[in-house]
Image (cartoon, rainbow, N blue to C red; front, side, top):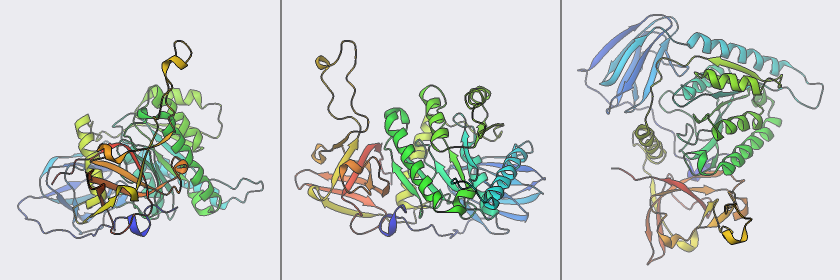
Length: 446
C-alpha cells in the first residue's frame, strides 16, 4: 500500500546549501531549557549550532552544519542544556524565551515510551496482541498541535521506535498536499526542513480543505485509513508496539467536535492530549470517562504559537502544493504530459442527481448522496487548475475505499482537440486512468 510507487513519488530533497553573504550573521546564546523562536522572512534563512546541543521539532540539529530554512517558516530552536546558535539572513522576528511547556511534553513522551516498552515485552495470552499507545492530539486552531506531534514522533524515533504518524487535518496537510488524510511510518527523527517522508505514505484524497464540504465522506475515509492501519498492525508487532501519533484539525465545535470523537473511537485512541482549551478538555474528559483505557491529558500550548489568519493559511496551502511538484527550493522539475480525454476518467465524490422536491415528504430538503461517485465531463473546462488524485481504484465503485498514488495539476483543457495537459511529479504514464477531483485548485505562480 505504498504511496506513490516509483512513477508518482517526487524524489527526496537534497541537502545542498547555497552560499550566503556574511553581512547578516547573528549569534544567539541560549540558556538551558530555553528556545529561540524564529519567523523566517520572504528570503531563506541559514542557521547552525556553533556549540552545545539544540533541536527543532524534537529532532537534534547536527553541530556546525548550516541548514537552510525556507521563506515564511515559523519554528523554534530549543536547547535542554544550553547552546549557541548562528543565523545568516533576515528574519521577520526572532526572540528567545525561557518559559516553554517542553518539560511537560517530554514527560508525556517518557510515559508513552514506557507503554511502548510494556507492549513490546508483553506476551499476550488472549487473541488480542499487546498494543502500544495511540495518541491523538486535539485543540483549537493555532494551538501547536502539529509541532507537538512532530516532537512526540521524533523523540520516539530517536529511542529506536517506528511509530505511525496519522494526519487528519485536511486544511493544511503535513504529509502531502492539503485535502488529504494520510499516514506514514516514521523510522528516523523528522528533518526540520523536509518534514515527513513520502515514500511509504498511505494517502486518501478527500478533495476539500474543510470536512464541512462532505462530512460523511470525511468520516468514511478516516474509517478506511484506520482499518488499513489496523490490518497492517496485526501483521507487524513492532509497529503495533510503537503505536500511533495522530494530528487533528482545529475545528472543535459542533460537527468538528463530533468528528474528533469519531476519530478517537475509530483509531481506538488510548491517550488524548488536549492543547490549550479548558472547555474541550472538560467535555472530552466527561464523555470519555466511561472508557477506562483512555487517558485525557491537558497540556499548555507554547507561547511561541502564532495565530495565522485566513490569508496566511491560503498561502500556506498553495506553498504545500507547489512543494509537492517543485520541491522545497524548486529543485524538482515536474513533467508536463498530455492525454486524450478518452485515456483518462475523472470522477467526483458526493453530489449527484437530487430527488425533485415534489417526490419528497413535505418539509424535507432534497439530499444528494455524499458518497456517490459521478463522472466528470472534461469538456466543461471546470477542471482547469484543478488538483486531481491518481486513484488505485480499478473500478469507479472502488474510489471511495481506495488510496491514491499521487497527484497531478491540470494546466490546460483543449476541448477542440479533446486533450488534457497536466503536471506530474514523474515522467511516463500514470499508474491509473482513474482520477479524482475535489474542490482543490491551484494557480501556479512563477
